[in-house]
Amino acid sequence: MEIYHVSIVSIFSFGLGCTMLEVVLLEWDRKGGDWQNSDCLEYDTEANHGIFDAKLIGGDTMFVVVISFPPIKAGKDAEFREWFAFTNEQFSASKGFIRRRLLKPLKEGNYAAIVEFENQDAFNAMHSSPAHDKAGERVRPLFDGNPTPHFYEVAIG
Image 1 (tube, rainbow, N blue to C red):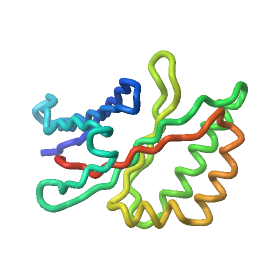
Image 2: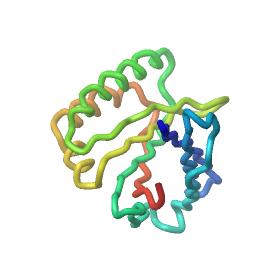
Image 3: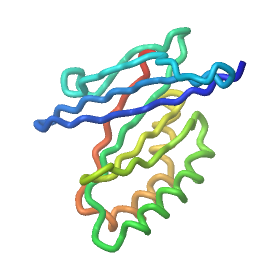
Image 4: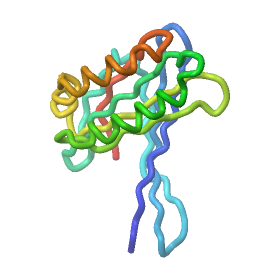
């Protein structure tokens, strides 16, 4: 039996620094042909100071960063998307890298990204690398403001 795992992430911002992250993990049974809700996690970042210290069932961990990007300057959207695709290739070579996805708003709003690493140490190593510094220098002029990261560990998955 082939099982596909899909995570659906919803990020709700209620102002005053309160953000709710909802992760719904779904499984697709190819032979059975239906979706099954595997797990659901809701997490209030303000109440827990942006850190969720927990382990996955079975003792595994995964470190997740949800980045809220500021507005992209006029005429720079294509350049920003190219930068994101290029840096995905660069960062994917980092030890412990799982994936990095760019999210676009359904209506109004700004881009967000989900960055997943095996653990926080692996993320910190990539984040403090010369390649990351160079990537930051390249993208900074495209922003009208600064990105805001929110840090998590997966609790159930």
